[in-house]
Amino acid sequence: MEEKEFRSQLAESMKLARKQGMCLSEEQIHSFFPDIQQGSEQMGFLLEYYKNQKIGVGDRKEVEEYLSMEDRNYLEEYLNGLSQMESMEAEELKAVMLSAIAGDQDAKAALLQQFLPKTAELAKLYAGQGVMLEDLIGEGNMALLEATGQMECLDTDGDILEETEGFLGNYMMKAMERLINEELEKKNDDEEVLKKVNQVADAARELSEELRRKVSPEEICANYEAITMDDVEAAMQISANLIDSIEMEFKNE
Image 1 (cartoon, rainbow, N blue to C red):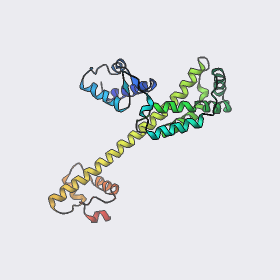
Image 2: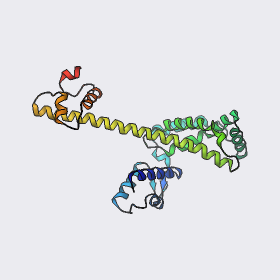
Image 3: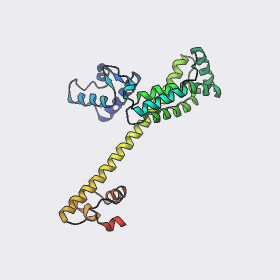
Image 4: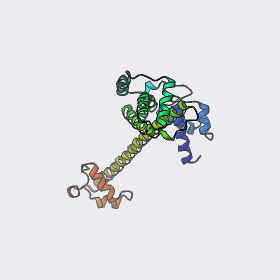
């Protein structure tokens, strides 16, 4: 399986796990990755990944156990704020959904209110993946507002409850997934920057010890092919000119 296909299947398996309450069966994992043998090193790495993502394999985990104390406190506060809101019965909810699909703004506002608790339920499925629950709920509510404004596209011929809940739920889940991916990319970028700063600092220190004096950026670049002048300048800026092995003249510049 090529890397691109592997990443795609991994993302799909994560979506399924969230829908099932943060768990996957061994059969489901095998269906996503038929080329990976049970007990192999690759399967070990895959299971470790699921474990780190708080995905239970073969058994259902309680989502709340992955919440930090800060997340728990925010969730309690959020749900308490909604506790006075009355939930609609199925028939009333269907009528509101139909009105919202027809473009009624009051119905859309009422529907948004009814789905605010659903945002918290979905956000809990993404707990422990690098984003605070408060931010997930905020992102989900923004997506819910946007989704209720686009309900005219829904088909009213089928099960209106299933159609609407699926549309709004998927819209919120995709928004939360985007937020998590953005945070992950940012984290990876930050790690790459830190890695480059450390590379420059290590090279400067090593060369300084060899020459028994502070070194210039030009000397670093000349002795280390993997380091460019831009790398040195960026490292100095990010470290606030605290790489002592590089001569002060360059720092002042």
